[in-house]
Length: 262
Length: 296
Ligand SMILES: Nc1ncnc2c1ncn2[C@@H]1O[C@H](COP(=O)(O)OP(=O)(O)OP(=O)(O)O)[C@@H](O)[C@H]1O
Ligand SMILES: [Mg+2]
Image 1: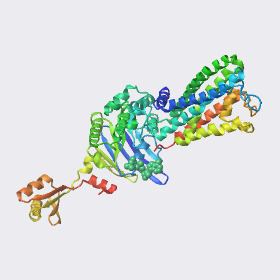
Image 2: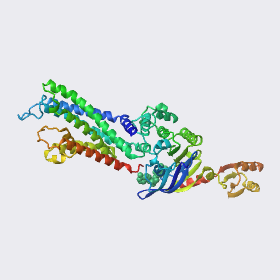
Image 3: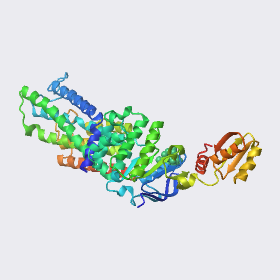
Image 4: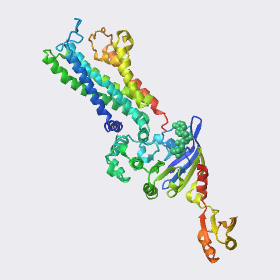
């Protein structure tokens, strides 16, 4: 199995997509952080409360820290491509000739997808820390790990980002078409999940989706102006995420094992 | 042990019977040509043999076992399939190193195998820039990674130039005759494999049409020689007197059986008859094959 994971890692790192995804993730997180930092504590024209807490508060640290979850979609796309490029370029023939026990191939891909997710999450967190810690300290804030929940948010980002790798692999195995898989992943993450997790009336459904469960795991507890979301408890979020991970692993395996490769 | 054994293999795609009750075997130390026109079912047979397609019925075994049950398949069987393809953004060496990792083989095998097919110079080039012939060689080198004793090759000559085909012929003969490997090679062009194979299996529309050794199928007693002569009326009785069966096809054209071209030429010289055309009629194998492929 170690050899198979090594093979999957090589597949990923011998093509260019991974660093393009990493770069786009960093840009996105950078833009996000710039916005969160620049508009921290700025009150709006109408004289209402600030949309974002001020830089010296624990809430701001928490909000800014959670932007580290921005890598999920890119890890999901990589997961989709890990499967669909095998069909697109027909390298799947060589893969299954070398390893005819296809479940082992799928297992290796899932492990690799999760590892890549972990790697992306670590990179994202390093960048976030490099911006947020100086920003809050320079603004006269204090860095309290417990109040700002940095450990919990970080754990949530690590776990959810790796699980999105599995989601991508499951989706890829299901649709097999690369474009369809990538479009599906983007629509899922940016349209469906954001609608269900941003609009309070939809929260009863949204909290059961991977995105909502990821939020629950991070226990983000900041009023975004649309009302305080009702997430599952953190452990519930973790269970839901793991459930999705297993579901997608089963889907990936079931759709691949008996299919004729012609 | 029989290296490759196909027994009553059948596979349908919807209503198309791609392979319909095919049986044959391939022994170590020999090259078997698997011939048939386009759509005959060659690729489907080979994919069943390699566990990529699940047959509806029958068995396809390598070394007496199903491919998917082999613990280390690439060390026993080297395969090149028609649709084997490569990620265009990956280098040749990286492609092979991935397979080495998956198969648990040492990484050195990758560059060794590239050298065996003459691709050492382009090891670090992206496959996207390779010609069809280079891709075929790369596919062949991936089949060599595990140093197997059984080779299953689907149209490996596709895209090779004449020099490449000549090289491939020599390579396959070397594998079978010097290294004792069993080689099963498919083609829809008889001429491509005729000089290489020891045995021939012909299929059409999913069914086995003929099989046997190349010698059996090509040297059958009644292959005839067509002769055009200046004075056929003199030549014909002389040939008959020497024991040949002569058929007078038309004015000046004879069909001679039971005598080789050298003897015919000698008799013509003795009779002072000028031969204007001497043609060995196509062998039975070629006839069978051309009838099937409609290329007459
Ligand atoms: N995946 C598939 N779905 C439907 N039909 C298929 C599939 N694969 C093969 N066939 C059909 O099965 C038959 C045999 O195809 P196969 O590819 O085995 O032929 P072949 O002998 O390899 O031909 P060629 O010389 O063109 O490579 C054809 O009629 C083909 O259309
Ligand atoms: Mg074919």
